[in-house]
Image (cartoon, rainbow, N blue to C red):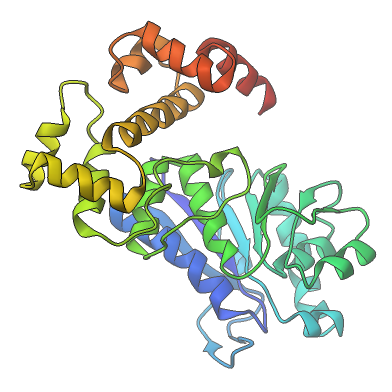
Length: 325
């Protein structure tokens, strides 16, 4: 994977949680996969004071960083009252032209919580579906009518702009980006590493079996889920799984059902289907190749399961997906 610059544009009165949670997601992605997300902390001045009183110094001036298409700028949330009282007007004005220039280049723009108000004030959200913290929504709709602020949804992706509802939802948004850019399995690994028992989401990608049924903390069951997520071949049996964990097959079955409310086979079938969906929508593999990679016994079996869940054939679903993006 080519290195991707993730730039956090830090304003005075930034909320620490908005910044730190999202930073941690990309940091963990690097630890797992050596994916080379390059993290940068940028401002219009070399130092700022956060809303919680922590000083940041040695920040990069925005003019000193060169961004490419598909890099991303993230604006963490700031103190809402300070924004309303126009205390943020000067730093926003100082960064507005640079932000617009980056967006025109194809750089993704994202925000967390009240950070969307900054984007709206810059004029970047005109005609864009977006969201912000529930407390900010009435103000946002009244003062920025050209932006399409939505009441529902923890995060919204539209026209290369990603906005999230508030504070910890920045973590959810960044996990969803990792899922979309890299893989749902990596997103699941990061969530587990950060001890996030359930990753919340709002779009169709929210129903993700790699993350579902992981809201427990049983080490053996976690290991079993991890192994299953990496062993799709049909020759790998539940007996093999039990042997690898050095647990009796019946004992493992009881543990798994107790903690996930799913049988091992049912969970595995969901994993295979979810993996097939990712391959169908994010690769050029044929349906036959996808069925084989997912561990289905035949293309016919994959077709049957797919039609039962999606009401379309895999090829019809791929065609529809490509038209919608």
